[in-house]
Amino acid sequence: MGMPLHVPSPNMVVFHGVLMVSGFLGTVIVLERSTALGWGVGNIFALLSGLGALIVGIGWNTEIGIVMVVIAGFGLISMYIFIISKEFTWHTFIMLLGSVLWFLGSIFWLRSYPFTFTANLWAGFLVLTVIGERIELSRIIQTSGSQRAIAGLLSTIFMIGLLINYLWVGIGVVTSALALVALSIWLLKNDLARYTVSQAGLPKYMAICLISGFIWLIVGACASILYMKIPDHLYYDAYLHSIFLGFIFSMIFAHTPVIFPSLTGMQVGFYDRFYIHYLLLQGSLIIRLIGDFVADGLIREIGGSLNGLAIVFFLISTIVAVFQTNRLLRSQQVMN
Image (cartoon, rainbow, N blue to C red; front, side, top):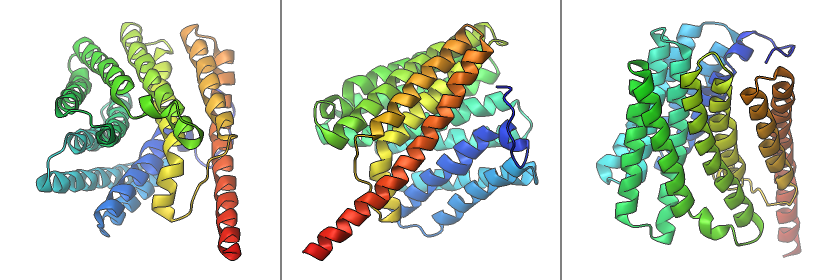
């Protein structure tokens, strides 16, 4: 955004998306999947994802870093194929499609395709991974098999749209955007959040984050079409960050109290202050997108800075919650 930053390497600015998608989220997704399967070897793929992104970020050897991410993507694909070989489910199939997008996006980048193409595929990787997980949870409310099949079909169309985007931009963008809007509507109608939003505490907080994320998917889809019409405009920033910040970080905010204990064994209790970083993220992203749509650099800088502040506050709040919760649990054990 043109703001002066003091970082160890300029690559950390240029490739901050690589650090986030592969270094952080890709590593966590592979680690979570390998933990669920009990595959110790899966941790190697998680390590490759994290180290590969870090190597790219510090500017040591971009090609080696990308190769490591490619191998990590292949590892994730193999995990999903193994699961499907035991039992086919739509949610696993959708997450498999997402892992293929991560793998292919990394391959295209390795072959010097424009990074914008890779970023689109990586966005699809995260979107389909989350959608697959949400469809898996939809079984709790007994979503019909036909509804899950519709989600699988829409996910396939979304993936195809992203892949043909490089050859036929207009057809690819419109196809993926329409499929993404349809998937968002599917989630708003069928996701468990529709029912838990009326509850209290953590279930309500999670549902609010989830529903907000689904709406940001629609915003991102619309921004992608605008970007196709005017490629030199900041619509591209609006498109990517509606997905990566609006959707993905809303999902991270929602799922951290559940995923963190499964990976670390440390509990994260719910506190009302969690709404602060939630509201800060949503509000700052709206400001950023206003700056994008009207092409105002100052407004965009303000929104982007507050985006970062929201994430920092989320990290601090979560760490404090971990210590608070586990101290409370220990005191209860002593009393008992």
